[in-house]
Image (tube, rainbow, N blue to C red; front, side, top):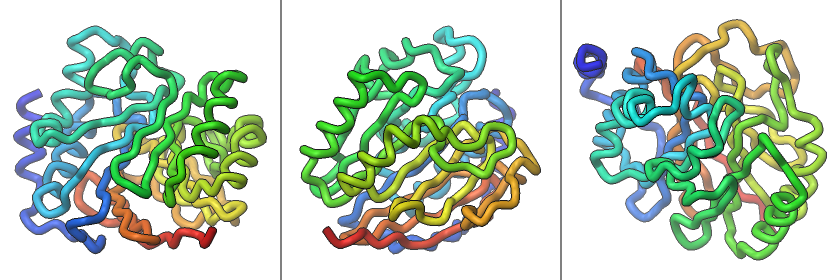
Length: 277
């Protein structure tokens, strides 16, 4: 593993291209998905994220599932999560995970994923911003009722949801989870969810707003499924030729985002304006 870390350090250029405002009083976070391979690519991506931390404060990271592929022994947690993201973790950054279809539900008890034993949960990094982590593997009645209650009572200006299976996708391998969409999207629309992050598809895709909601897929942080994005009029931006992560910044009624490859290329960026309530 050490040679991958050394290689990552050698490939990082000192100047990182940052398009976000990078304001000191805004909420900064990163997004990764399907990252749990322990591969050379995951180490390079972790190192790239750490390099951006030198100029962009990362308050927390959300993980979109498939956090560990294969075994889930203590050694696997170390090799597939703790070591690839060691430099980020050493700065005290918390990672908040959701469960993917390749994940053992017992991951929710692993301290490093900050799930506190729960399959679904919410947290408020700052006044006016709340994130809702759902378990899209098993959307039972109890969870649906919890989602409805949490969204209705959050009182936050920004409501951001994240889970594994995308409600919209141009992927030819999996595609959208339309049944899950029927359950969740009406609640998202009713309670003003602005942004939704999902993984599962091994690429990056930003969808055109659907019913006023901005959907992102970030499932390409360690695995790629090249050439799998179908031609679709729903796609605002698709990318599948290098591993990626997203940097986000919430400042007032704006959410700024920048999608970056492990080699340091910015492949997408933009600003989302919160809808007037």
